[in-house]
Length: 73
Image (cartoon, rainbow, N blue to C red; front, side, top):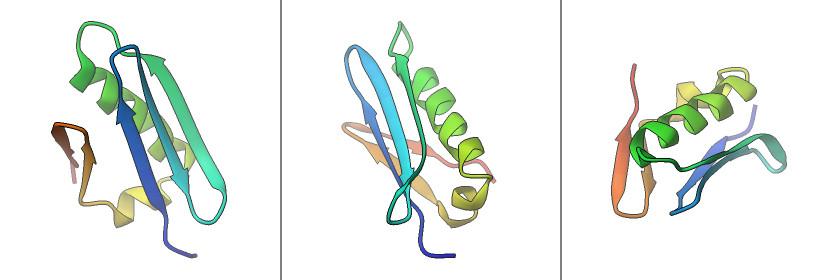
């Protein structure tokens, strides 16, 4: 398996995330709502689940704008 990259955008109206390995293997989008950090965690989990867990093995942390979301082991 090649490297998997995950990108996340915590915007003011939506949170978007994607996992790619040369092609899109998982993506998710959700309205930001009142708690951007929680929404970011939910969207990230959806993308990781969509990548069959392969991306989780490679990630140490995810950055997005002004904050970072620590990865749970």
